[in-house]
Length: 132
Image (cartoon, rainbow, N blue to C red; front, side):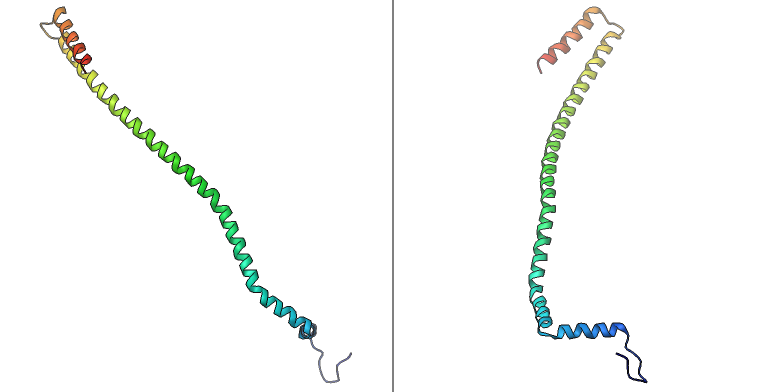
């Protein structure tokens, strides 16, 4: 169809828009719009459920790993406590051995040192250690 003389033809997009509005204006178009509007709440609920399920799927392995790490940390703390106690015992033993060595050194290098006096110092240190 040609436009009347002295008028310009409408752009194609206007014709398409008018055609779509005509189709939507019919009863079927209004029903489709109403159905979409009615279903919006359901779509939102389904989307929320999907997001919740996805979040739980991601969070559950993290919770499991967190529990494993807490158990591992507790085990490590206990091992550290035992190691600290052992270190304190070894430091005490080292201090005692150094004191013994100092006594023996003094006994050996004393100006009036005799074999009998050195043996006496060693015997007394052994007796003292046996009584602990």
